[in-house]
Image (tube, rainbow over all chains, first blue to last red; front, side):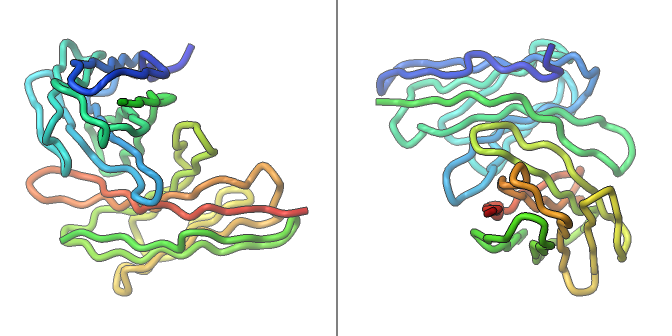
Amino acid sequence: DADVTQTPRNRITKTGKRIMLECSQTKGHDRMYWYRQDPGLGLRLIYYSFDVKDINKGEISDGYSVSRQAQAKFSLSLESAIPNQTALYFCATSTGTGTYQPQHFGDGTRLSIL
Amino acid sequence: GQNIDQPTEMTATEGAIVQINCTYQTSGFNGLFWYQQHAGEAPTFLSYNVLDGLEEKGRFSSFLSRSKGYSYLLLKELQMKDSASYLCAVSYYTGGFKTIFGAGTRLFVKA
């Protein structure tokens, strides 16, 4: 089983719909992240959480919200989806100790908004 | 602000050596990561540098010069499966540890 699991893997929906992307992890990591990836732009951070009670905006949080339901679960919501939110979304985790903190990524959710 | 630059694409031949460069401008530098990402898949961690110098791990090596804001990833004995994007990422501290990713370098390995 994957250490970082994202659901759904693919989603096609219409403009204006509310969408939730879910992420769960079995790595026991405190820190969780949501990124979107667009061609030519690389990974951009949407939100991150360093523990259950800590939620922080990333560089492109407008139009998104998150919920950290437990240490192992971090969900991303698009309240009213728009076409320019079409992208590949990744959830990632990392430990909260030490300076050596590589991130571990889920397999991604490909989201298309028509 | 924080910024990372990498070449967009590179092509190399199977069995050869290729060097992928990364330059960055950050304050509060804490370390530099390289990730590999095959098309449509998740990025996977390759290497980490926090001090100047070369870190070697099998066919892959990564170099860091903090004074120059420069790193490279060296891939030896290239294989077709090395065709992927290589992402440079910098960890920095501004009231908490954060990471910024470069746009990635797409490497094509040809026979």
